[in-house]
Amino acid sequence: MSFTIAIDGPAAAGKGTLSKAVAAHFGFAHLDTGLLYRATGRRVLDGLDPVAAAESLRPEDLDRDDLRTPEVADAASKVAAIAEVRAALVDFQRAFARRSGGAVLDGRDIGTVICPEAEVKLFVTASAEVRAERRYLELTGQGHAVTRAQVLADVQARDARDSERATAPLKPAADAVVLDTSELSIEAAVARAIAVIEAARR
Ligand code: C5P
Image (cartoon, rainbow, N blue to C red; front, side, top):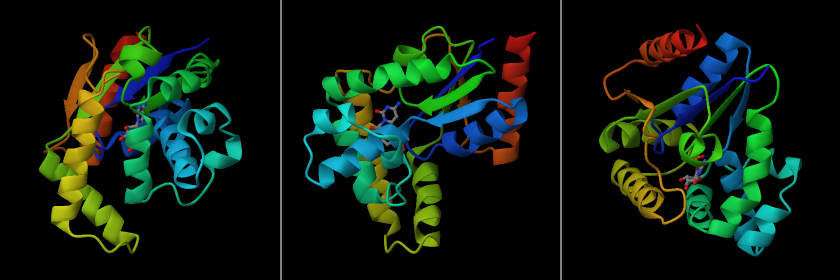
């Protein structure tokens, strides 16, 4: 039996951590759909055409260890605005969502475009300042030389590009539960998400 949990929201809102925790709690498979766009963006930085890069994406492209850099995030949000790139990635995501045993997909358009029939939709957000601070700590912790101001500017630029694009813009689905994590610990956010999902499973 399939059961799909769609988790959308802006960059650095805590979707990744939350999605992994929720998937582990329910024993569901998890797909970080941002990786598809990051891997496509990475291949474009390597010289490929964006649409060709998305259409010929291979599993090993998702395993590269250089997909979490600010440069790749920026390239990802640029290729993500191209309708043909998004179209090339739809079937894979829908098949994943409908696998038996349950699936958690996190991204920007899962509840609105990829899985409008998802049993649970969460929209995870936080203020730009809180998200930038989290991303700053994550990046400096990994040894990247960035400043707070730079990270905030990157977060705001990516938010604007993701929200204002014509195809599948970032926005909560009409029936999504909005979870603002600005003032929540990760444990509290996970507990709220689990409560919403358990209510939907009953
Ligand atoms: O979530 P993550 O930061 O890894 O995503 C990188 C970029 O990929 C986002 O800024 C967004 O432009 C794009 N993306 C998207 N749709 C998704 C997931 C990610 O457009 N479902």
